[in-house]
Image (cartoon, rainbow, N blue to C red; front, top):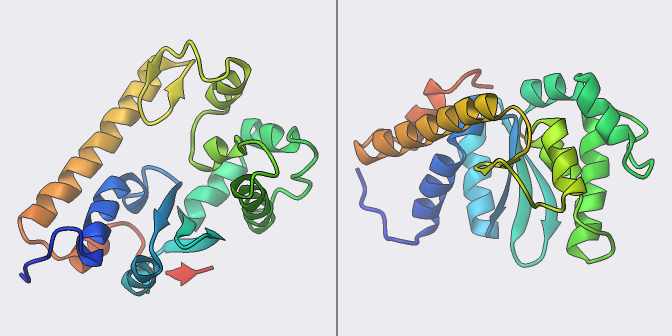
Length: 199
């Protein structure tokens, strides 16, 4: 195995993949990541032929993008509670098919980054957080959570803790396999439904 320089784009990609193992393994529908243009190019090449998609959201010297599994995100957007949440956001989400939601979110994310609107809390919905936790986070302004993990939990603590544990296991497993010399490409082959598209 080729020795990677610490902080090289390749090493950053390895760490990024470990951190996002829950998306790669299908436990989580999506993640927001922020990378250099070089790292973005590496990710596009790496994911070619996988069921993962990359969609740029904003450029400001770095690339903010959403990494997602189309089938997981589609299923998430069919959930009535999540649909109600999106419809309730300032009448921004009129169409609730995945493509329309991602286009609207991209516009709102860009407006947020340009400081034209407050934080788009629907991000929590797209990341797979329970709608009731996203709603409580907004109402309580991020305070008084039962626990803070991958998100701030206000309801159904046992379910959230099981999810956190599953995420932790997937991250640790990815990291361990990389440390033992399993190539990144092989890890992606192990992950479900290999088919990328850069949207």
